[in-house]
Length: 395
Image 1: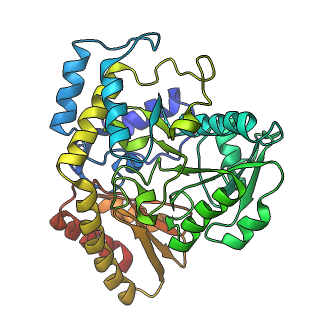
Image 2 (image 1 turned 90 degrees about the vertical axis):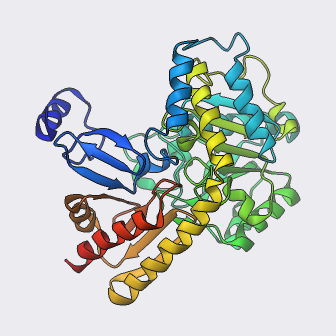
């Protein structure tokens, strides 16, 4: 079947919840994918920051094959070997002590919200439940996480929304101080906002949030679902700011393409959860955690965070040259290989033109181009992408 036939089949049988492009991706290798018509694309979307190792990394593929032949699923009523291995790796490479596994970023953030409230009611008082999040943030699609998301467009049609969330402007410490109230128990933010336009947290702001939380005995939660696991140029984005959060969420890149989320917390905070307080049937099952162990091993052994830093600097340098040539480019921003290009006009036409020329990119809002290539992308592949992008910009 070709792209058109798959599109027609999908429109007939699949719920219309995505603004899909009229092509079906059927194969991928490294930073390259092919559609059902046999056309080749350079992939700078990477599954929206999922395929940090590129497509079908051989070590991840082998780990999945081996695990599939051994044990596909086992209930969390029992200890699961690859789950324990992955938890140990995450703890040993972060500032956290305990891990809970789930299936997605939305679930990880849902768990963080529950853990923060559970901890607050045990240690701060029964009237502590409110979580302050940032405007233009994105935290997921469950009812609680879309309420935590500081963008009204995601709230519409789902009212009444759960109570207990308030919103503060990102990178505005004075506004955050004013928003802390008698019921506040935590602050939740993305160190680098993704869906909100690829906006990095300013150094003094993130450090100031940590200080404010300490002064007011609040929990500091970082959502690193998109910006974590090497994407920002460090294994975890919070490391850029020389602070330690109390809770962190991960997903996307953790499984190398397999669906997995993780909630990490300091020992004291994690202790608020006791058996029966939180669960996920498929959370941390053998197959996905085996994929996670292989993925994280590759990231560490090949120092892909460092490569993301170097490749990101090279990429931004190339983009800055385009900015001088095309005045409708307003700003280039990001960290590592999480890069946004804000334009004066909507960017859908640029994305479609790049698609036609063999480059996959995406947006972060109507006027921001977003680039999320694999962390092992080469300079020559960046050059190839830039040639296509410049051709699209010229149009």
